[in-house]
Length: 230
Image 1 (cartoon, rainbow, N blue to C red):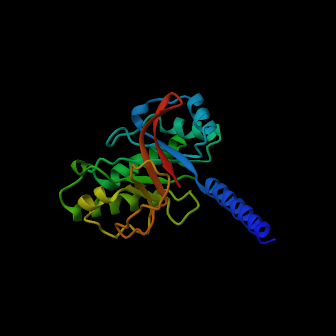
Image 2 (image 1 turned 90 degrees about the horizontal axis):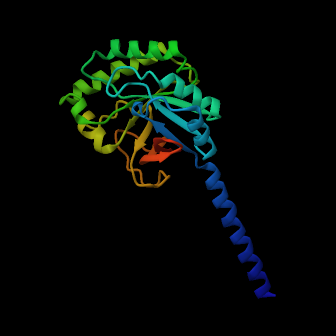
Image 3 (image 1 turned 135 degrees about the horizontal axis):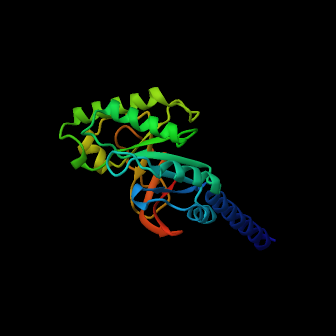
């Protein structure tokens, strides 16, 4: 009887493990981000991404550093047409330009082209060569840029439609690890091929990220993406 009971307990425990693993798999949401340099990505590529389990996307709104990506609206709308529920945009800013005027022009273009409806705008903070050597100047520039965006667009259904993309290795030298922006969602860049937040180390006042970019350039569906998770 004891052996029989132990066997039943073992089977129950194994069943619980299987259910737990299934729940974790359901909770893990895979996404992608797509840069301006991929050009005019076809509808069939977005259909393929959806069919391969990509559930959200983030499209570069700028052309390199600054300027405007002429493909961003088509990419956002093609992603939605494919069934990808959330299609955000990200901004790689040209900090040599005035923050307010450059963001005003960018957001007006995105709104006019229909690329901003109920989605997020992520500010890409990386590359010390693209920023001032003064952390104070960088904090002020980003503050003004975010304030400008928030004053023009709030259609995402959240308290703010702006998030931050960065990593500790970039945030520290550019922003001197300021905590001024820790109330904004964090899209964390850390290439370890691990779709998990378990290896996150706090920085900039963030105790955990909202999205993780865990894998770099990946060829799939006749285009190239970075792979993300939440």
